[in-house]
Length: 617
Image (cartoon, rainbow, N blue to C red; front, side):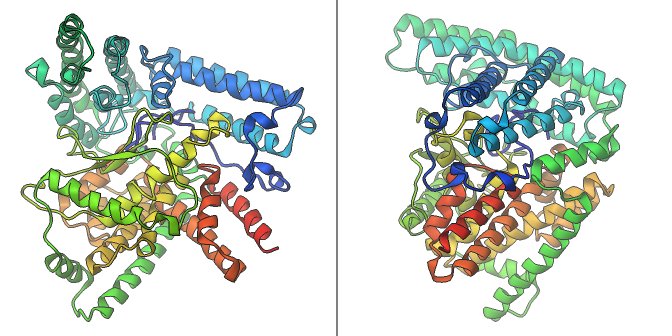
């Protein structure tokens, strides 16, 4: 998801609109000995807060997080805090960035005053996690991401409509809810003007988007300028108005939404579209890697550290990708040989596709096919997990205006249960090219992948809030990719085509390690990256490969966390199975792995080593 303005709460991410705490790597081996935080009998956080330094530390945690919510009101809305539903952060403004910097610095100063010998090991761990987080975030502010505010994904320009269609993050249950979003629309007008001003500054500073990023964005902006206000996504709340609203309120609000679209939304998007076409596109760069920007090499190193929570270098990641590609292709060859097919791997893929059940040719049938996967997986989950999330999720197809650039994705549920999670499927062109429901995709985005893991974490109200809503790409995406491997244990992958699909998914993530580093460190061209993805990852169409490559161009380093995280989680499981032997319990292993939410990979490994050691006794 997604960088990025490297802030404590990063911008909108592909799999979820959550703006969550992006915590840095923590080397914490000294904090796990005797630490109740990560054990099976973790006490409620408020029960560990005592007098003196413990109370001071707890107050710093809470006041910091409250200040973050005030600075990022849409994040507050997303997690069920509705105090700021009438506000929209202009996070790309110098004023906002300055206020955020001051908060980070002041919190660091307060944390430095805590007397470490007067707090528990658990509290020292949290103190160090947050302190490192603040420092890394401050480091990230040196890179002027705010000068690159518009792109085809992970930009408020294209994802603001998804906040308020009546089924998104913003609630539409009361008249006040409706009035609040009207105020957000007015502020979005200001965001657009700030974005345009920032991009003009970017032109002067030599910090501009690659041309292909803006070319991808233009059709999305054009699609949002509906000729009729009532055809706009922003009018959907008026269409879906609660039945208990009075006739007078319904008429007033319907008129207000139509007026807001005509006076704010459409003019704002027209200004942005005109600027992008007439002024910005011609100034965009032909290079695609972030290394081409001022300080771009250091910028990419920072993003690698943030996204992988490791100290791996770009070259080490590149070589890891090549090694994994060879390993996964060997597994594909073994499957081909077991089925007695004598052609190439690409011919084998085509053979499996042509000899599998027909796909769906419309969105409704595709959703029903995924619902059938949901039923199968749900019936077997208890074999692998002891703890289950309470949150529910819906399965939808991505809206037509963004399906050309947005991948299938997951948006998290509201922690208070007021909004379900959403598993979005990209069904672009399904009428002309029927497709089958993908079992690995379901496992990755829904259960036991993103929906399962994120919901369990958000439902842990005994964690400090900055940890309850923490999001490390390497953990979250690594877990989801690992979840794909659980299909056999959950009754899936009965068809060879689905088994091959799982391997293809993993191969694709391995190839991305090579492509991302190739683009942003080795000066690969876009065509070179597309060619590599098509040749190596068996991408079937050039347009599909191009869409993926353009995603990596727009969001450097985000694609690195998946495979790196999955490899670490798989290695931890292998170690546990080998060490514990007959004592290994897969349900307890998974519960412990997920118990404390997303963690940096090194911290996760230390935690699980303690768990393995405890279970050998």
